[in-house]
Image (cartoon, helix red, strand yellow):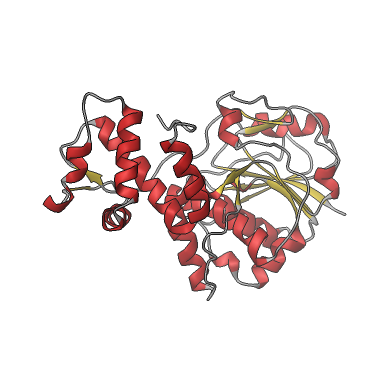
Length: 319
């Protein structure tokens, strides 16, 4: 089987550190680089052996780069996918090379509920009705080891026409990629490199053992946040908020109220990601978080009800 490390990069920042860390432990495995930075070219020919570089025509973020690499280097049997902002700390466990598919970091899709409508839309374009009330795992950063036969099967099914053109869509592709693995190809896997989502390691809440993220990726966002005014009939939200209560008690009171008032919950969904005018920061943060919960209620009702009960019983603190 021909292995290859696939590095997805946006220019040369951290790239040498990433490549050097791989070469410290793996001298013979080829390294393939897809560069999403349209403005410049990177020359590595005189620095590293067995490194193959190609510029992506457009910045299609991580998943678009994976489709690109699968087609360009079609003799590779398995990609081990990293970002340029990641380094190896030691040799990877053997299952990375033996298993058909191993995600490096995962997160529950409910953590990204406001992004799920993008995934639903993409699936609908494939004449697939997204399963509601069925949770699955995202593939953080689309980083994984994966047999290219899996990717080629997804390309054969025309899923390569879906990729990100904005940062928000890039997050959606992580969820989308996980859905394709779990619910389209129904691939089962027993190993995950890390137990917790990637941000817990990046912020040193958990210790990195095999791979460490040393810098941020492409952080620009094309989202436009607009403000809107609530109709007077929704002023009860403003009257429930009590400046004399702490933020979590206010959160509980408002969550209970909005949970029981479907019309208001739907209003928040329709207007996302717009912001309310003339409210204080605490109330703004509360309503943004509750809007997230309303997306969870719409798509993952059973999981939402568990979380709802944890919040109102103060077993889970949001702020």
